[in-house]
Image (cartoon, rainbow, N blue to C red; front, side):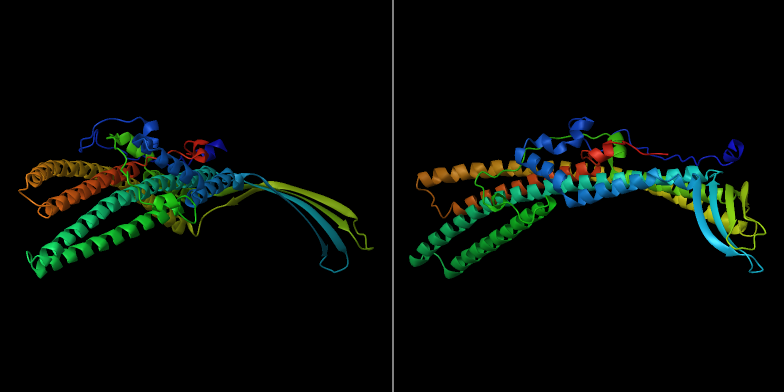
Amino acid sequence: MSLLAGCAAPIEVRLDSGAPAQWQQASAQKMSNSELAQWWRGWSDPALNALVDEALAQNLDVAQAVLRLRQQRLLADTAGSAFLPVVGAGARTLQDVAAVDTYFHASIDVSWDLGLFGDAEAARRSGSASVLDAAAQLHAARVALVADVVHRYLDIRLAQVQRNLAQQQLQQAQRQLQLLEIRRDQRLTDTQTLEQQQLQLRTQEAQLALLNESHKRAAHALAALLGRDRPESLWLQPKADAALPTLQAIEVLPADLLRKRPDIQSAEAAVEQAAAEVGVARAALYPRLMLTGSLLYSYNLTRNHRSTSDSIPMVGPQIDIPLFDWSRRRAVADGKELALQSSIKAYRQAVLNGIAEAEGSLAAVAAQQQRQQSLLAAQQIQQSRDKAQAVRQQLGLSSELAGAENARASLQLQSEMATAKAAEALAYVALYKAVGAAPLDPVVTQTAEVKP
């Protein structure tokens, strides 16, 4: 039997998980794997930490993924049960051909599919692949959840910052309109200039309305991620001292990328599933051997007792030999092997996509940092102009209305700087998502990796 089982060796698959030795985009410092899994804590924001912890515990998408993983583990535990002995029992009455005697038959039947030629091994491998894929889907749900929670939190914080600046811009526009109305009354300005300022004021009011909308949308989206039906009132309130979290630069090694990205784990599970299907198709090319046994007990229920009772034991092999449909089975096996090669290509593409996504996120981080440097230089120039304007106003060489344009430009630069900082933060969120950074669920850590 062992010789027969060895006729079909397990399908060996070699996956190309190679990646560049280092990222092309430069970054500042390295993080350990534990720090990478808890990346949002590097921003030292207790409110954000509490929200992520609550989301991981309460999110319904994650809960569904946990249940699917448990389901696949239960099914995987029974993957080899089809190749265990099966015992059945039955009872019935029968008449003989002459319709003279009636017999009571009781039987015990035993069958055992030996699962030769790799059939049993392929079934177990398929179960393991299903578990691996379910674990990857759970990790994908947690990665996406953490990224979305941080994203929505940043949206709320940015909306609060921008609302403060927009409110200041609105007040500044209102004050400028008041000054222009005074000048109009004194016939020092024309109606067209006044109308232009009124248009600017209405534009500021419309911008503030859009910020209020985005603020509320982000708050409700965050509530849904936490499994709540409504957001906290604190999220929707204006915050005078609102600020974005302080960022920390990171560097993630390619090995971390390959190990943590859920789509790469799913691609690996697809390869394992395809290899299992190849094993089943190859096993179908060989004879199927089963051991069967039966014990039949017969009792004559009529009065014409030619015989009263008897028992017949029977034990023997059952062989299913593929003859007339062998070409069909060969075609199926060839097709499964092509599907395996396709899944291997898909795995490599998933690796390349992961590298490209991470590189793109690093490039976005660098671009936003350069953008902030340019805006910082512009702010320094604007601050010099504001100081000069203040001096001129103190000396009576300029008016408040003349400095209104400088004030508006200064607030606009602050708004652009806040947007650039938020964009940098979101680029980091995309980077962490690209490398699959999120803490593993306790259900996953019970079995780190399930492989054949």
